[in-house]
Amino acid sequence: MILRGRLLSFHRRPEDLSDTASYLYEEDGGLLIEGGRITACGAFADIRAEAPEDVAIVDHRPHLILPGLIDTHLHFPQMQVIGSYAANLLEWLNTYTFVEEQRFSDPAHGARIAVSFFDEMIRQGTTTAVAYCSVHKASADAYFAEAQRRNMLMLGGKVMMDRNAPDALTDTPQTSYDDTRAVIAEWHGKGRNHVVISPRFAITSTPEQMEMAATLAREFPDLHIQTHLSENLAEIEFACSLYPKAKDYTDIYAHYGLLRENMLLGHAIHLSERERDALSETGAVAVHCPTSNLFLGSGLFPLKEFERRDRPVRIAVATDIGGGTSYSMLKTMDEAYKIQQLRGERLTPLESFFHMTRGNAEALGLADRIGTLEPGTDADIVVLDARATPAMALKMEAASTLAEELFLLQTLGDDRAIAETYIAGRPAKSAI
Ligand code: GUN
Ligand code: ZN
Image (cartoon, rainbow, N blue to C red; front, side):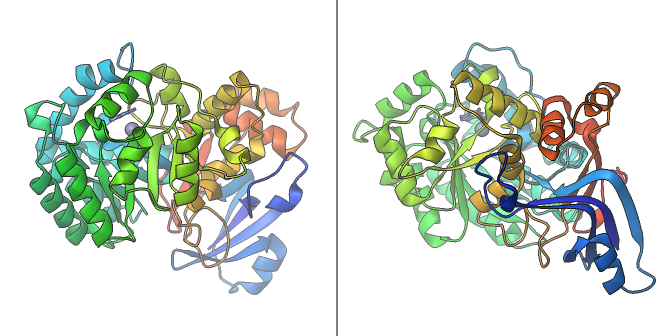
């Protein structure tokens, strides 16, 4: 199959709007897909000439064809938490989230929500996501079974949490270890699944459970680890009071050997220079969740400061559903842009689209598989329509450059701008 359209794929993070060397843009492009992989990418005429005579051609002109969008932090059991009215993180967790997540002890509930969850990812053009499941192993089973059924490259983990939450939502150090091992044994490497070691955050894990997370991290050096860090000032104070020997919040995780390149730290807003250095030295990734940070009033993530330092902090971007308010990575970068505006910084549309695709793939260490249109990688692809709504079509009349079109997609776009989503070469959005 050949997809024909305007191809856009990044080689590296764009320095500024004039950095055309940072990406590939093919005005009349062709993408040859065979066996779920991209096998050639270039000018349509060249790809057509090389391909078998009877190859199917799907013409997506005038739309843009990009690698599928990647969401590096969200909560599978929070689809019915989104839009819950609360003053701040801890109130929101206790009032809504820790109540809702208890429903995932029921495997039938998890299975039902998994169908909606993956439908929604595909509708939004998100082809890979990194999710927290609930404390219940059954929720991870439901998540990974549905991911495998759809042949999607998904990451996720059973949450470890053994204190400061309702009894029905806590495990123990031992059961959190045993269940995580069981999830790894049953699901890691099945289909395109990646299991993530997932201690929720320092507040909901005892030191004994953190030891178990440390053991899992040692036993499985190739697995990702995810947790939350420094989202909210009251959270930071509470976490540090629970680990009085730690230098700061980051040091809690460092003490247990959790900081490493394949570790994802959700939020990481309020970090001292010492903490930023600790992330930089270990390569751990600060995951920016803009819609959530604004919704919960958590703070303004210093994305540009992190990237600009002598010792840069690696960053990724994410929705953080259900603290986040949109499943759309387009809307997510719209809010990321506004947060940098409030900090007096510039975030170009080229950078935004880099972060949603290759940037997040690099943050996950998976850029050899996803996040670009490079031959040999998986054919997870999104087709974007910058004229998807009347308001967008009207504004497009005034857009003359690629950057302007991308900025419009980010500012006014949402799931309506996703013309098609391909999962390993198969059209998935039109099939829902
Ligand atoms: N910190 C610990 N758990 C959560 C969660 O579910 N959402 C957010 N936004 N922060 C958290
Ligand atoms: Zn989160």
